[in-house]
Image (cartoon, rainbow, N blue to C red; front, side, top):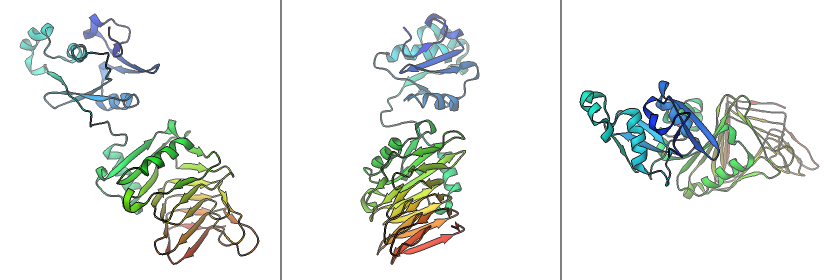
Amino acid sequence: MCNPLYLWGSPCSRLAAVSVLAFPKGGRHCALDLRTLQLREVERCLGQLGVSLLLFQDGHASLPFLPSTSFLPHEMTMIFQKLFGGTSENNKQQQKINAPQARRLRIESLESRELLAVSAAEFDSIRTLYPDLNLSANMGSYNVIEITAAELSDSALRNAINTAASTLRDDLIVLRTTALQNKITLGGTELAINIDAAYYGNVTIVSLGEENLTIDANQRSRVFNIDFEATVALAGLTITGGVADAGGGIRSYGILTMAKSTITGNKANGNGYGGGGIYSYSYNRGALTVTESTISGNSAIGSGLTHGGGIFNLGTGTLKLMNSRLVR
């Protein structure tokens, strides 16, 4: 049997001649053409399925495989040996003839390792795209949480924020987008970030892809509510559709940095409050920095002293607005 790692259109006895491998899980299949096999393509394909690594002993290459408790390591080794050369009894003679091309395989336990959801190159591109976030050059200093374009949803983003609240280092939440998948619509409840930065680290949320990610409260709630002890950075986002008594788009009591984002179509409707786009209450610790962003088309309405259709900054903290547009 070749299940769960099996051959497409060819029995196990003809492994050496096969050109396509298929990796099934949960009813899905991922096909790989071995004639044009590229390691990066294998990682992309199998990264969706949950994998470990099969390493060549000479260290020159690696190949992911789909592990299974019902699939014996010996059997799995034999399959890859037949495909790529190895040390089985059946190919010892071939190794003697063509020893330089033969490569011995070993199964290595990688329980503490995982394929990176965001590559080092992508991390560097995020640092380049959003320089005002001042991200550390050391990717390992962050707990990186990825949400793929196919996974974009209210619940996925909330789960990512909850995960960030449980780690003891800075968190980087990467929201991937495509031309067609670039929006999250909230279900009627604001996104609350109640994370004490002194203990659980800072939280950075960025979009990565063809389009900025839009987060739409759909006129049913505020979009983001940031607590006193939190340090948050938001980049590559469009914040819209928020409604609340103060800070329809964002209410921040902590330290907030916005970069390359748009705040539009939000409303504050509370009496004596304001900040249709952003309400920043900065007392002692709080601060608001906005860079390369646009804040437009927001409003603050209500009786009494209602201020700041775009931004209402209240308290003793700093407000920095750099290379940005603030319009009605």
